[in-house]
Image 1 (cartoon, helix red, strand yellow):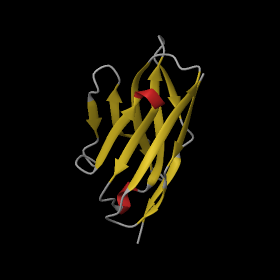
Image 2 (cartoon, rainbow, N blue to C red):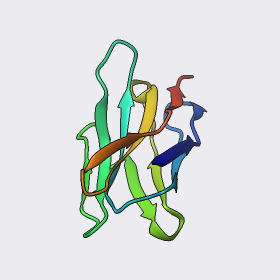
Image 3 (cartoon, rainbow, N blue to C red):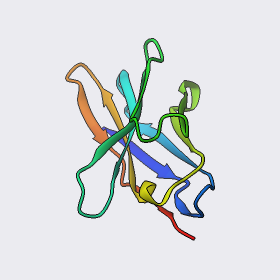
Length: 118
């Protein structure tokens, strides 16, 4: 089993910054992809960014490209999301996700709230 714990959410003003972190622990099989998703009230969960662990190939949602940066520290089993120039529409619960193991199982964190408001 893999446990994912997110931290770093909170309240930011428009134009501000926040940094999210997600640490994986437990009996961790091979991790293939790590990513961040978000879900705003009344909306579907959507991909924000993800990174492949074999070649560090990165994908960003168009709405965050140029403002958010995903990175990882493999030694610490930790994934980060640096969010700059935040906008009110970035308000959502942000979830950490990994794809791991031979069965390519999905694991989710509990989510962390990000609110962008003046």
